[in-house]
Each structure stands twice: as C-alpha cells, then as structure tokens.
Length: 326
Figure 1: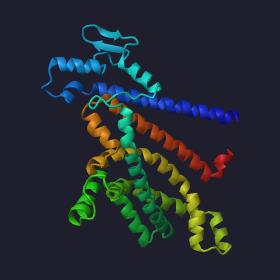
Figure 2: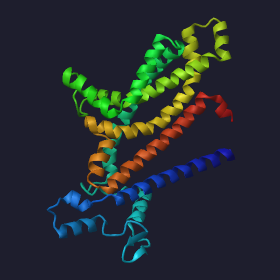
Figure 3: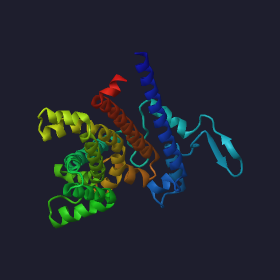
Figure 4: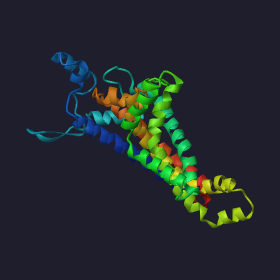
C-alpha cells in the first residue's frame, strides 16, 4: 500500500513537472517571436494610444518574466511584478486567461473546440486499428507470402506519405472528382471520414508492421503448439491467443501515438477546415500572437497526452498479468 502511494505521488509530481516545463518553454518561445500582439490584432492603422490601451488592458506593458534584459542596464530583477507569475497564479484558480483578440475566456474557447479534436483523434485511431489488425494478422500468418509482401508495401507507402500529401489527394478524389464528401468543414457527420482517414493512415502503417512482427513472434511460442495440439482451429488460435499477447506492444504504441495524432491534427484540421483545437491554435493563436490562447491550447494538449499515457499503462497491466504481479 505504501509503495502504491509513493508511486502515485511520484507520477503526480512528474506530471506537474512536465506541465510546468511545457508551458514555460512555450511562454519563452512566444516572447521570442517577433511582432506585437497589439499591432497584429488592431492592425497597422492603430494609433499609439490604442496600442498603449491594448497593452495595459492585457498586461503586456509589464515584464514577461522575473528577469528582464536591456543593452543599457543589463539583467534587471522584476520581482513578483511579471506576467509569467500572474499566469500561473491564474492557473491555480482554474483561469487560463482572456483571449487578446476576442476578450473571451480562453477556457471557453478551448472547451468549444476540444471535443472536435478528440473526436477526430479517436476516429483516426479507430481507422488505424481497423486497418492494421486484420492486415497485420494476415501478413504475420502468411510470412514472406504474397499477402505479406502487399501488406509490407502498403505499410511502407503509408509511412512515407505525409498528411499534407494524403489529405489533398483524398479531397481531390473523393470530394472533387467523385463528390461523395464535402472538401472542407465539420457540419455533417460524414465530414469526419476524410480527416480521420488522413490522420489515421500513417498510424495504421506503423501498427501494421508492429502487429505483423508480434504475430510472427508469438506463433513460435510453445503455447501456440499446445493450443493446436488441443484441436483448436487456426482462427481461434490466432485471434484468441496469439493476438491478445501480440497486442501488448501495440497498445503501448497506441498510447504514445495519441500525442502524435493531436499534433498531426493541427495540419489535418487546417487542410479540411475542421473546427478543432489545432485550427484554433494555428489560426487564432499563433497567427494572431494571442499568447494566452497558445498557452492554453498547448497546456490542454499536454494534459491530454499525459492522461493517455497513464491509461496506456493501465491497459498494459491488464493485458500482461506479469506486470500486475510485479
């Protein structure tokens, strides 16, 4: 019991450290980006008074960090009067700040878009699993055969093609030429199909190769020969015994790849104008130099990634009893 409590505390501390590091790095990088949020949002015709009022309203007239540097005075200690400390003080109260552009709470903007991004990531994961497991099993059970060679070629092709190539290609074929789907948007349920296939294509290629390798490795184990000796059908041996044990490394990769899906969703959402967190981060946050919105989006993506890794560990323990016993 004591060991479990210490492990829980360690994981919580590690999670907080990761969140602090990510948000701090993003804050530093944003400050290094050339340009002024006031000029970007108000436009070049804004007067000096309007710019001063904007900066004062959003606290941009105050130092960014505990230290500031200038060529004349060098490093200057700013004490507690800085935006960085204010941001973390607000976070402890559940306040992610206010958007520079819309004056709306960042948390509200994120909550509006977050479900769409999670829905797209989960749909992409389902597409990847639906392609990878049957294709990987066929390749693994037909090692060095025609099916194996075709599956390996498809997997290699999927890994080689980036989303910004697959996405426009799917739009041209299925939206422009065939007219089956809308080229962009997220108004109708079927609009998720093309973005999900685009995002899941590369992941399915990686998973196919992993499933194939796992199946080939498990087919050589003693328990497989025992199951066959008991008279079990080959289908039952493969899908009930081999696949369950072979999915252990695949589950690990799936959990880790959720972060990749969230990152890839930024490009995919831009291609298909999918109204998710990635499009919010790119168009409304980074392009408009909306510091608070960028910080909030990155924070939510980081927390999602950490939660996904934690759930992956739990599923991993469920699939492999040896981990539970240890």
